Length: 353
Ligand SMILES: *Cc1c(COP(=O)(O)O)cnc(C)c1O
Image 1 (cartoon, protein in one colour):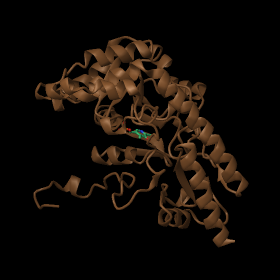
Image 2 (tube, rainbow, N blue to C red):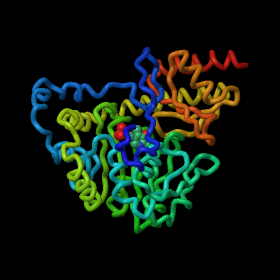
Image 3 (cartoon, helix red, strand yellow):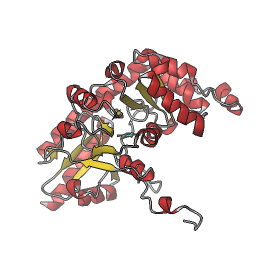
């Protein structure tokens, strides 16, 4: 760091993304990417002509893509905001709505605390219950920005919509942000509730279920006044936030939605397979509605299993946090990948018996 950087940023602890190692080819079950490529329609949409048009600025209003998403989610274009990955919407929301402080769970997406620190927000950390579910009552009457990943990460556990509604109703003077990065893998979306509640911001991404992590495309659905807030920040920072190719790919992805719905079904089947096999090996597996599972073994520590799998060419995600250090988060990949994962785990456990 240089001596020119302001102190508040110098001491900031930034987010650590999952490893993207280049040294050898791993079976990558560590960053919740999709094992499937984008749909053939998306691949075909990136034509030479589109690439040649990169000399031109993109549409800052993203009209086509907003209209496509609005249709898909049964809302109006004015209810849709698009961003360079959904992390950007989180960023804008902490920036815009965190004045009275922010509340989130102790075990959740690691970026929330980074944004809270970045904007120096007063933070209320609400512990998950002992079964790792979200403590709905504790999130009620907070009267500050409430941020909940649903399904939660890295637990994969879903909070029922009725409980989300309770939280929204009990926090009428503040924004409730529901981060639905994993909702397509069996969860229930709160999009419909955005028509009823003006303080609900529902956030989604093309990174997980739509196989487009590298394209960087996130979206928010909310009352039009909230969308106008986000637009205001966008036009004050980076109006051309969605590049041309991503806009084209995004429209094609929405138009081929059945392809992704099918992929999600396959992931759910592979998740069931992985859960069953891990349980046979004595693992505790939390009930996941996401494209990953969170599991621990009594035979081997979380970190040791992570390290041994890495030596064996399989990457999973381990977190150092005390409460979850025995667990690992395992992304659900293809059936073949999960088969290899299970056989490697068996080998490693064999050594430890
Ligand atoms: C992956 C993820 C995101 C961010 O995804 P983008 O790639 O920035 O769209 C947001 N929230 C949670 C909980 C995630 O796991």
